[in-house]
Image (tube, rainbow, N blue to C red; front, side, top):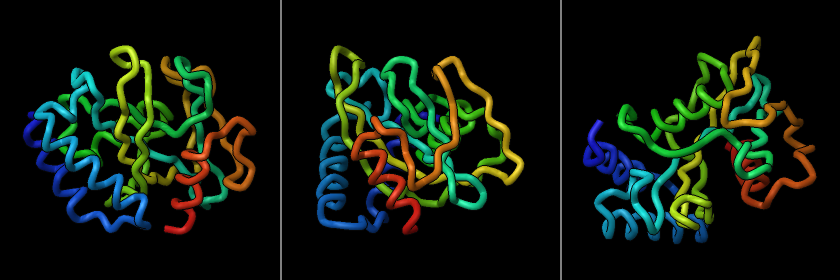
Amino acid sequence: MSPDALTADLRAVLASWPAPDAAQAALRDEYVAFVDEHDDAVRRACVPGHITASALVLSADRREVLLTLHAKIGRWLQMGGHCEGEDATLRDAALREGTEESGIPDLVIGAAPVRLDKHRVGCHGGSWHLDVQYVAVAPADAEHVISDESLDLAWFPVDALPADSDDALRALVATALRG
């Protein structure tokens, strides 16, 4: 898929997304301004930063969350990453990342994102990831498989996340459970 088509989808997603609070609405507006300034905002080659997509994988009963111990970052995180050429939509990118990193086929991903999160990463010496976060639900009999990007993969109760979880992950889980 061309960056222009993915960018058009991103614009439509952001334009129709009902932000859950004023801070998220301001972040959405910041994302729109960033995309207006950078033709390649959906590609990792965009040096100041780039749009990423993630999927918080919940168990079928929504009592547990599957997290990856990210190999480069060394923290427990939701599945997610860069948009790729084959991604037709941002939702497709989040689903692809969730499936690749969890090893679970048949995830059911929400139609719209639940949160946005902007954070610094090591790309290009410290660029921004402007993450668009979705929720995906695993089948009841799901068995996960650790990917090359992960040191470990584990289910955690939604009310007992790992001790080193950051506020962004906690906010994502809380929002997912409200939705």
